[in-house]
Amino acid sequence: MFSQIKLKTGSRSEMKDITPDVQKEISGMGISDGLCTVYVPHTTAGITINEGADPAVCDDIIRKMDEMVPKNAGYRHMEGNADSHIKASLMGSSVTVPIVKGRLALGTWQKIFFCEFDGPRTRKVTIAG
Ligand code: ZN
Image 1 (cartoon, rainbow, N blue to C red):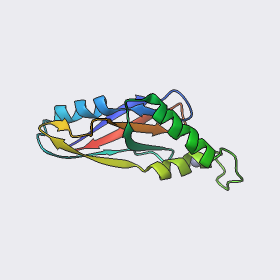
Image 2 (cartoon, rainbow, N blue to C red; image 1 turned 90 degrees about the horizontal axis):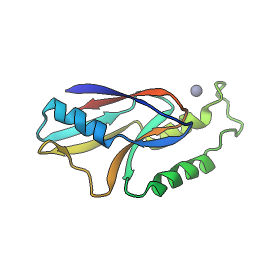
Image 3 (cartoon, protein in one colour; image 1 turned 180 degrees about the vertical axis):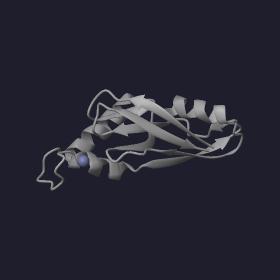
Image 4 (cartoon, helix red, strand yellow; image 1 turned 90 degrees about the vertical axis):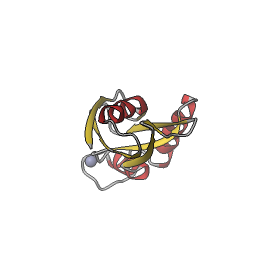
């Protein structure tokens, strides 16, 4: 089964916890056990799973990504957002999570984060289960 959620991001770079949205879609699909793929159909945004308990973790990740991939560094891409494309590739465009008894079987501290690198924008996330 397949569904899509829309979300709005509020800044150029941010990590947004979409775990409740993904769980809602999975519950709506009525899947009991299986795998859920969460896919980002964009070239300047990505997705990852990491700690959701301490927001400083996401702040550190975004800050370090900005350090590793600066906005202006003599890139050839004419649109002016080469750093956003590079960060999106580093993060990846999908994650897969087991579904057990209708629930996302994430670890205790894990959350699914949509990673915006060229916001603010309206974005889509595809969920296949
Ligand atoms: Zn571009």
